[in-house]
Length: 203
Image (cartoon, rainbow, N blue to C red; front, side, top):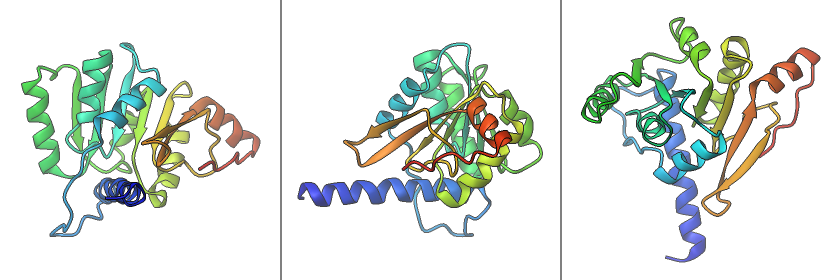
């Protein structure tokens, strides 16, 4: 396989993964899904944890968390507690089983719900770090929820797709520039929103 073809395959895989996570989080999964859950790569998780400077006092929220592997890795590497929101009950059950097996039951919790459920508000507010891997059609709605309910000191990292009208504090290339991770300070976004400054939609 040529380098050009390999890069194209990489792009398609990451976009399919984002689509799958997004469909689950918004209750748009078809009755018989024709795609298979593809987890976030360990390399991408490592990059996220370093970019957000996740530490032991953090609470990490993963919206559309799948089986919770991002949160388990955050605990393994940084002893940061984790909260996952996921609509697919099977993935939640698998994740909970893995959490118990890894002796993380007191550190990581998974919740079967949509990110726009009323019960999700408290979970969003509890987070000091938020990880997102969603398609653009969902990021705008999630961004508004974060502006309204998340702590002003929270850091937000979006993988692959930037958040519309938010100005990133940092952009970290991933997979040799095929994709990016975007780091945002929520305090800055709240200030921009209050001032009517829509910021830049960096990509």
